[in-house]
Image 1 (cartoon, rainbow, N blue to C red):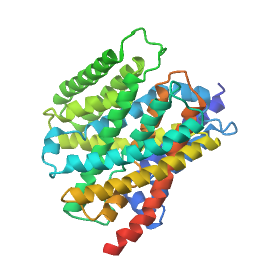
Image 2 (image 1 turned 90 degrees about the vertical axis):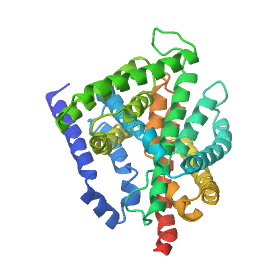
Image 3 (image 1 turned 60 degrees about the vertical axis):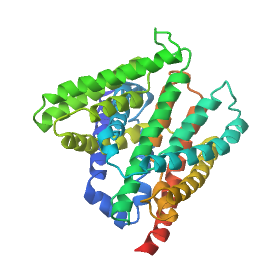
Image 4 (image 1 turned 180 degrees about the vertical axis):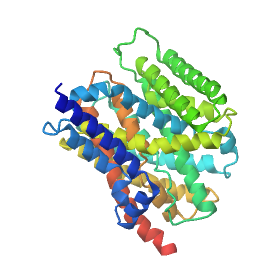
Length: 401
């Protein structure tokens, strides 16, 4: 590789990291919302497009060779996001949540999953994705992507207990989505994955649970002795990197394994757990945007099949969230009226992109066009749902303020 190419690649990666950090600054977010660009910027679409530009032969920054070298860093980003989601599963905190939170999460998760299964199933069959060739696996992954809603941001017009209830609901459904990905990783494991162990699905389930628990305990033991924030950051970076590498070596789902480690750590008596959560969240935003740049380098929006699946996913998910919001508002106390619940649940969670990419990485060399279709579908669905939610919130919530 020529020296000029190396310099160009290094400068491009440094610029990407700088832009990701800048985009996560509160002042930049407020400016984006004030200019009416929040609906697009919140999806991370500009960074996906940036990755696609970097992948162009004329630019030559994220070439296939560079992407191969960046795979460990890419897995680290997946692991950190999964770890952050797992840290939300704090049983002590869940016990303090309002009554009915479990019912609300179950209703608003199951309804869109059923809607997507009914709508996307015939579309996959029409695209010649048949049972025995990944049909059920891909359908479950799409349902997992549809289940999660984007966490309710602070700019949401509602304030008070109702907004807090909705915010708690949108945090917990991401855990459900990763759990579904874990099921896919264990029970739909490709036969030839380059791992010397040959175990039945129940065996791989125990391995996944054991690895996640072991890594959570190791992180707990290390963090107990940390006194300074810099020490905690270094230990967290090393712990997540180790967990991601181990999960990748065993062909386990990286975000699911790290989420299990994070969930265990969240329920252990870690000193200054609030400071620990703040560190994780501060790193999560920039890492996710850098992750999107790498995703954009492999993104191919040209096949029409991805757009067909994406539109189907968005419409079915929106219908399911509307139905789930209506049922939840009528059966669970503490929620606002159903239109407001729907507007809060409509935006697709950023975790959906993590899920679809992580599911594609589980194929380990058995890459098919369907993998690219599904990645494009989730990106399209996320952008469309965010745009629709922007106008729905202006109409529904604006009328109440």
